[in-house]
Amino acid sequence: MKNVSCSRTVTLTSNQLNTYLYRNAPARDPVSRRPARTRPTRAQTRAQTRERILDGALEAFAERGFHGATQEDICERVGLSRGAYNSSFRSKDELFFALYDRVIERLQSRLEEATASALSMPGSTADNFLKAFIASYPFDRDWYLLQAEFGLYALRHPAMASHYAERQGRILVIIEGALADILREDSRIVARDLPRIARLILAVHEGSMFQGLLEPHEVTSGELLDFLVDLMLAGAATSVD
Image: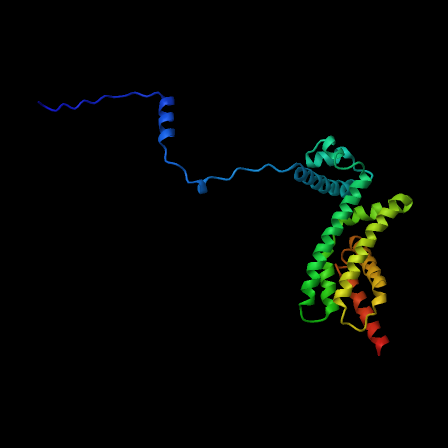
């Protein structure tokens, strides 16, 4: 008897073919699977929205002034609804102080890092601190314009003035703490003078920002503060002698 081989052509529909390929596909290595994307939590979303509003508000305030900028202007800049704005801030005053708090937090973080770096560097500790302070609290035109305008507004409104003064106090404490670390081994500086030195440094630094805006070709960043520190140290050395 002859062997007879029979062949039969089977036609599959597209659905049947996909099912066959799926069932007979090699198993995937679990390690190679892409991790599932995690959605941000509600707290993370609120924090991101808050930061967007702060960034938009700083631009709007610097361009149109604290009183000239409107809620609608800020929302339009960052692409958010008024509802999202109102769920984060109840007033422009609250928005300003949130901006101020962010400035202080960034200043503290940067100054701590810069102070640690300055202590490890050779040379005058006072000069190292000065460079660290200027680098940590750089000239920011937008922020200065807003701060100066709100400062005048706060002086006319005692309730606002107390909140403004509280934040100025926090900056002074940060500067005083950095000064104590930097000048710990400098016998020319008396510890009881540190609060006044901190106030003087802040006043000269912010005043030089104003003069730098008014006369940009006459006052360079850090110039007046550098001169102040030289005068202080020279005076301290004379009193010791």
